[in-house]
Amino acid sequence: MSNFTAEFELLLRSRHGLIYIPTLEEERVELAIRQSAKHLNNRPVYTWDFVDGYQGGNPGDVGMGRRNPLQALEFLEKLADAAPGIVILRDFHRFLEDISISRKLRNLARQLKSQPKTIVMLAPEVAVPTDLSEVLTILEFPLPDQTEIRSEVEKLLMAMGHPPNDQALNVMVRLFQGLSIERIRRILAKAIATHGELQVDDVELILEEKRQIIRQTQILDFYPAQEKISDIGGLDNLKDWLLRRGGAFSDQARQYGLPHPRGLLLVGIQGTGKSLTAKAIAHHWHLPLLRLDVGRLFGGLVGESESRTRQMIQLAEALAPCILWIDEIDKAFAGFDGRGDSGTTSRVFGTFITWLSEKTSAVFVVATANNIQALPPEILRKGRFDEIFFVGLPSHEERKAIFEVHLLKLRPHNVSSYDLQSLADKTPAFSGAEIEQTLIEAMHIGFSQGRDFTTADIEQAAQQIVPLARTAQEQIEFLQNWVAAGKARLASRNSGLDRMVPD
Image (cartoon, rainbow, N blue to C red):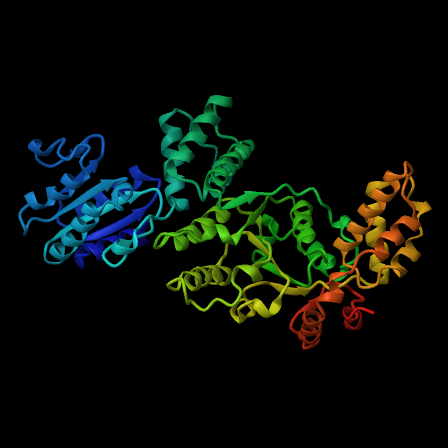
């Protein structure tokens, strides 16, 4: 809050006439604005909304501009040029596409440069048309920090006649991070109504509220993670690395001095188990898995993409500790250079990698990439991720393990009837996904003939599949040279680079 207050007061003193604050915390931001106004020689504050018009100020002005946004702007012309003031316009983003509103705002922007007046627009999201992008200043309003949260929780519990339990309070304050004051109040009320006090067990109420936020924003998805580490065939180096960090999010790890793990970048051709690994990490570490579709970050309005990126970061940190899975990150930022979109992609990327480097929250990022050539070099620098692993084509032994994992699911009581050695021999250069598809095709063969599928059916199905490795020779050769140069760790213990090139 202190950073917002300092920035807001600086904008007022430097006579920025039009300020746009995207926030859902209308009550809290208006309180902060009034505190700043009081600090700056008690500047008058006027508030307007579409239903009630103006509130505050002279009694004769009450209700002015009701259901008339243009008249709401004309109100400033009633005030003396030298008279200071802050005019808060609620939900005004809905009217910015109107040509009369847009023109009036641009006219006011010129006039307010020489007057101590400021228009502050409050909106739940960034929705700034292009013609206003040069005259509007967007100012982010942060979610409450731990000090604000603790103060609010203690105040509410005391008002309800339920003095806080110190242990429960410490846990709850940490978990409440990332939530608005209004949502915190709602959870507290539910906790008190349930069992008369705030308890450590109320953590589920907080998590459900955070899930609700994510469902509403549609930027991140809660992804069910049922896959286990044992479901991954091979990749022993990667598994060992993950198992060693299984307790790294605990309080004991903090007391030991360990920082939160930052994340992984998994590189390799399609179908080698990168996405499966992300799901298995979440299941093994008992952490919620959030999936980011980077395409959802980009919006058509000025500032919208950058705002969505910041919102995504806030959401991920709100649910920490958690796993943030970014699938095929190479497609999201492939070859960006800022051309053609007014630099939007460049700014989104810059915000994202800055967060990767500087984040201290318990958000473990798992990014996957198929085409390392498409990734901007900035994302490969040390400090963005804890480690970069190359996930190559499975070796002969790993193919046997992959067949066994799938067959244990499909035919758990009949696995011994399948010749795993022969199946591994007949599927050189097959990825894990292609092995799975081979088994599905073999099941179709057996089912169509009214019998169970056999090793021969699997081998027949394998003959009909042309593995991606045979059609992606250039990509594989580039990866071979890249990994050989020591740019990434091998995910498999016996991951010989020679087998990257198909037979």
